[in-house]
Length: 166
Image 1 (spheres, rainbow, N blue to C red):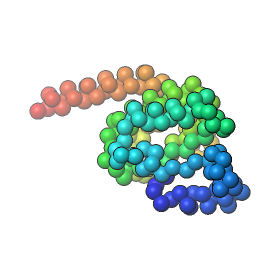
Image 2 (cartoon, one colour; image 1 turned 180 degrees about the vertical axis):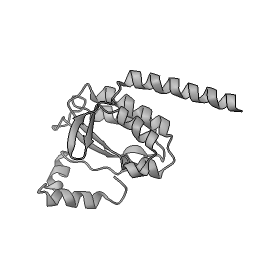
Image 3 (cartoon, one colour; image 1 turned 180 degrees about the horizontal axis):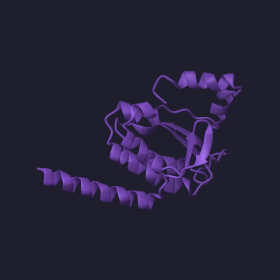
Image 4 (tube, rainbow, N blue to C red; image 1 turned 90 degrees about the vertical axis):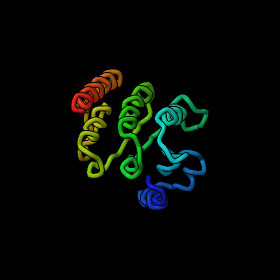
């Protein structure tokens, strides 16, 4: 979530009957800003994020609450200078990790903040998608190894076309 929105988020949870203070104290609830989570040194690094999520994944922690429920507000990517190609690659790669665990991870993108081609690629990296209020198997999902190979081929073709135009 955007820096400065933590208090509002915690208030919404409290309004739904969740004792946020107790759950934060016991380690059952942790709220991080997007800067803390994705941009601790001011830039996005997908390898670092894979390490962060690996540490949070079920079975990889000694915490008493071993399953994670993570909601990733990805709007930060529209507001900072980030390599969108790297972000899409990360979205695909991270599915290999989550497919091996029982954690629930939701990536939220405001569709009005991103170009259509980026949104389509992000959608293709997720095996499930929330459409309205319904969770559905994503018919556009492509397994990470296939997706990354396809993107590599597509990018090489685009570079060749660009070189030919010069």
